[in-house]
Image (cartoon, rainbow, N blue to C red):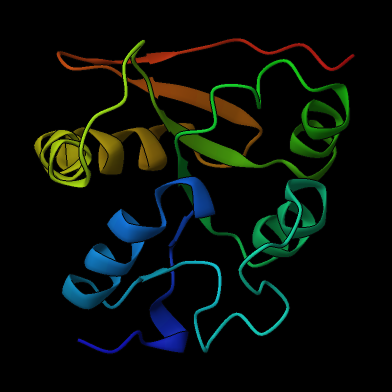
Length: 139
């Protein structure tokens, strides 16, 4: 299913690019680095460079970067641009299938959170059994 420029809502970060590509084939509201509808975000774009672009488009980020919470420049961009993030949490890496299963199981809950929380910044951890908010302070 090709993405519909008018209905874009989600951005799958490069750290889950395979998952993002699979989701983009199944959903018309999701893009990823290197997607034709994101010419300013080619594969390899630094986080601090894509964050303003994605936030400016009002997209919700789905990613796996466990260090985003501790990098001062990225935290500053997250807060500055009101980024909304769903982080696939966990101490061990999953297969692409494992990430897809976790996301699909939690997708309805993600939709409710987006509706309830509205504008960002906010950062949610998608765990195996629940989604929890992580309060990140700008440094």
